[in-house]
Image 1 (cartoon, rainbow, N blue to C red):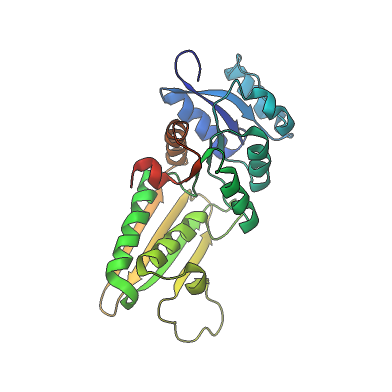
Image 2: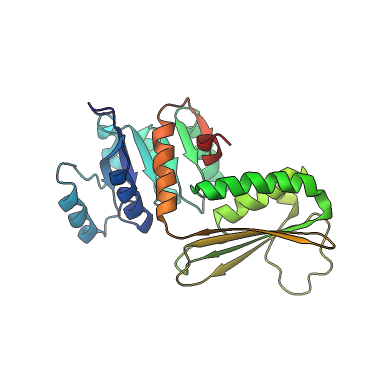
Length: 267
């Protein structure tokens, strides 16, 4: 930390849409400052703008330079891409908050390995509302059991590169956990063609991509005579950035391990 006790952040993906939101959240939050930003090679215009607003900060552009800044930053907030996350964690050996989606199972296993040495918060959604929704869905699914069908619908902006969203998977896993099911055995990604009668206990996930949508998730739990719909709608990306910054201030004081926003919020 700096001489004033502020957590110093290395922001990976500083030139992205979420990176910009995180920069704003850092500026508006006490006890945390930007120590360095890591951008893509082709974002020169953004780098010039960033340096204009942070004249006292050296902007680190290449992962190979990261080991030299361990004394000037305390942790990582990462909203880049899966490959960049893995490279940075391998080089930096710093606590981290990871908000990237689209990891392969091998990459997730590598993150679990890194978390044995440093504390890492890895989640697909840093919204407080989504964290509460996930906990509620798990409890309701436990009460309803297999007598109620469960599906998840997610809607995101047309620029989102992966489907379904990590949050949709997280919510579907919450249904499965509440019921005591193995998620991998019961999940159904979309339904196309002659699908036949729905198997008991199946959990479906559907994805839509529409311009102008930040992120929306609805969990449907339907019984024979009633249906419960639980929806979360993000009004702006700022809600995710604010959660990530809160997680950053929390994770630097934790022991090595892999955490989620539910741990940060004490849920």
